[in-house]
Length: 130
View 1 (cartoon, rainbow, N blue to C red):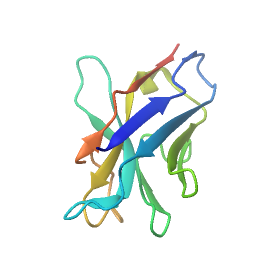
View 2: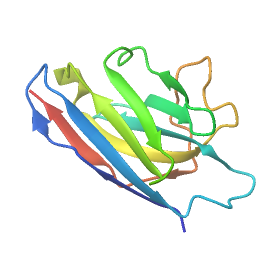
View 3: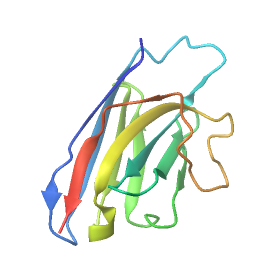
View 4: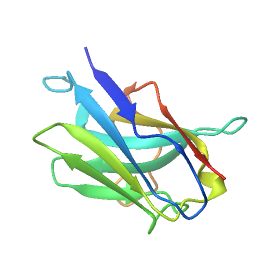
């Protein structure tokens, strides 16, 4: 089974930084699903889910939401099969539950804003910015 376990969420002051991690397992050998497309999406109370960043782990191509571009960096460690989201210059509006996701679309949002359409996601990690 696919398992995605997030960690690294915390409460920080505006302007601070956090690094979210996602330990992924069971993502190889999946047919008909693009498991090379992984990403992060977030959801704040009372708001819709928002794609934050996506990455094609086959070639490392990232995409970012306009609201986080220049502040967040998505990366993937192929050896550990971990996904990361480095967040800097955090703002109160970044406060949300952040979810790691895998099995995104075949184009992996290249050339477009990252969405929240994935086949698998974790339980989330809370980020609070005050």
